[in-house]
Length: 473
Image (cartoon, rainbow, N blue to C red; front, top):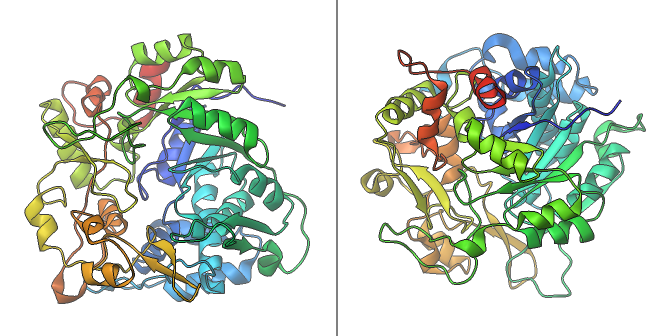
């Protein structure tokens, strides 16, 4: 039986901010709860080293279809001690075009666990959000989420043309491939990442439900391309404006900066909603829609509803650390949160929205004090070596290393290690050598002060239910 599309999509934010707890709460309210699929292998490896507080991982893997794989992952990372608060977390292997069997198993199991917990003991729908730019984790991650019965897959930060077809193949446990973007590759080069479900399962299984695919786009032109040329069916779009948190698409045309050093967006950056209406596919508007009035405006424009990020990022159920959350909420009440669209922070080269906060990498002196290193590596970009083999580099790694790999010196200026910072945002920051503790960097949307609508005058907190009820009335 077909159900109506959800009116509210909870954004898939950061690393672990859109946690299974948040997605579960939103889904139980009849809307689309979404977990972030980014870096789940590191998230669960670190949670296991902290003792699997609450026993959630152990509860979920009882339902994983390949018990021996889940047991291997558990045995490798689980610790009953509190040592990770004092010593460094054990790191999973970094992503490559040909990841080890262990890393593939960890990606599958961690994505399964996150989706399973979000869907546990209710019939609501759950989605998972991925970044197209993190290609080397995509295939096993999708398979793990699908094993848990994920209902929607959302993907942005690139052109996810091949993903709908990948979902078709993985639902039948068939081998899947993705063309790998490699810097310096020639036109006739054919770099790919591949994944074979049978390598994991060892035999045929019944087909899996194929989740709906929603592409996150910022322009009608990209939506038209995906609707017409994607491999497989695109089921809808999230249309994300420049005020949304996290990575933003660069402005169209030549980039101009305002007096604060932020990219300037203009009328050309506003998507043509008539194109989306003509496509006949459901679409949701994102970026400063966390109010009853904005929600109604989206519906009048023909949208199926809205995607809300910032408001959910600061609610009780989100995975953002309580200290950071309370600080932002307190400053929101005073209307003193400064959100800066940083054109240089992200190693991806995309503008990245950052809340300027004491003690975080948003402060220049805190950034300057951090020893540059690249030990997590999700945003490393593959590049073609002279030998034709693939190497990996990141503008946020040590400058000399990046330049020695053929990178351009200017690209390293003010680049921040988002991998480590976003893990620190959820209380899983690495304890590095020389007694350095990784610092957070909080991404948030321009409409952060809109959260005042959900807080009672005598409180500095609110729930996911408060948001949903305020928008739906």
